[in-house]
Amino acid sequence: MIDAPVKRVLVIDDDQGFRDFARDAALSQGWAVETAANGQGGCTAFTRFKPDVVVLDIVMPEMDGFEVLRWFAQSGAVAKFIVLTGYNPDYANAAEKLGGAMGLNQVQMLTKPVRLATLVAAIAG
Image (cartoon, rainbow, N blue to C red; front, side, top):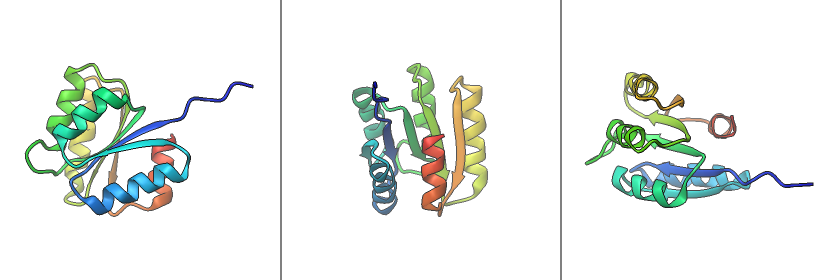
């Protein structure tokens, strides 16, 4: 029997508490996980880690989630993107639509606070 490869999850969020929450959620499922505290760090981690799923905050200082999505699209990134915000849900809706318009195949929107089961299901799906 051949084991399926371990899912690789990258969490990009400026909120340390949420990064820890999402990291722990991924680890509880046996997935490999890396985190980044900002957009630039997320882009660097993406190149090195090559995740299957990216959990991305939209509202961040310096390089926000929209800019990160643009970078992913221009880089030809292939991954599932879960965009989140604790602010107005319209931000995440706009990011979901923008990601699709830029050619990113799988972009899903969630709002914070997010339940553990909801986040795990989104990553797993």
